[in-house]
Length: 394
Image 1: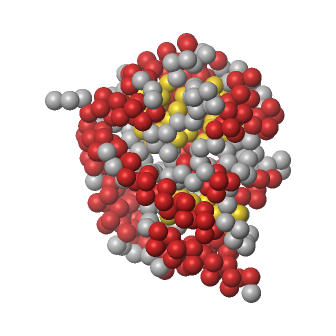
Image 2 (image 1 turned 90 degrees about the vertical axis):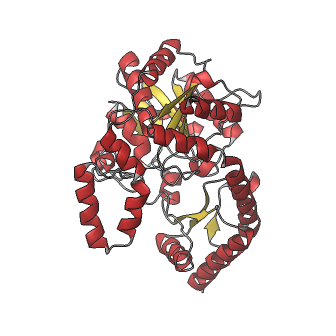
């Protein structure tokens, strides 16, 4: 019987022109990040990790849980990733996170950020949560990152709900760090029967909760979580700077779903690429909305198509109109550290956005338009967006 996990690694290696032996699988992508940050701290001591507030709290939890300090840099409005110019303000930098927000890969900007990080002696960790199976490369075709983390989790590119993958660059400058991370990843074991069952029944329980009144759904969900029979996409502990569970390998069931879903990735990406191209054409120059350059200039298979409206009220109106028409749109990333920290102090964030003007502006009025839609649906969605913005400007 073939080793399913090995087949997943081989598939990811083929897609990224890398080697299967440099890929490792985890139950969640945040588990892979936690191990990487823990080993950085163990080998180099306390220090900072340059990251961004325009992200999910689960992307910062591993930094905090590993005992490192997040340094929030401003983002480049064109890429929605850390602006290379802002990296120099950090001190004792252990790592710089390159996040491909919504799946936007910007090779030239990525190269500049990696160069700035390496000039500080820092590791570059590439967050590919929104673009599984894609890594950024420099003009010479070399990967820009030392570590690349990919997600098969909830609301990602594939309908897998669970699973993560991490690639370790064989050319990483810090060979000791690479060896330490690889050893930890190779020793991971799968979840116990209780957690494995919670993972298998996740979608069934979500369907049950969605049919109940909100109050009853909250109570039932809390009861399930207390029993360990429900594994939420983001737990309350993970909104307080923690990472749920010790790092684990994926269960056999999760690995099988990862492999099966990868088989449909090319088809999914082709559909999303068509939708993004249509959005780019129809939304170019739309009054009252800002669209990042990569989404317009290099249409690719984005997880969501990002637009930024003039205020939160406009974004809420658009999301409401789309919901009424049967479309699911998200307010990523509002609030910052989405879905919002329950203990902001755990993240070293007091709400002060002085010095982060682009982050402050883009945290107002974001809307992620669905890309797993047909061209006809794109036209309908754009019509709804234009209608709402027209009503609000009149």
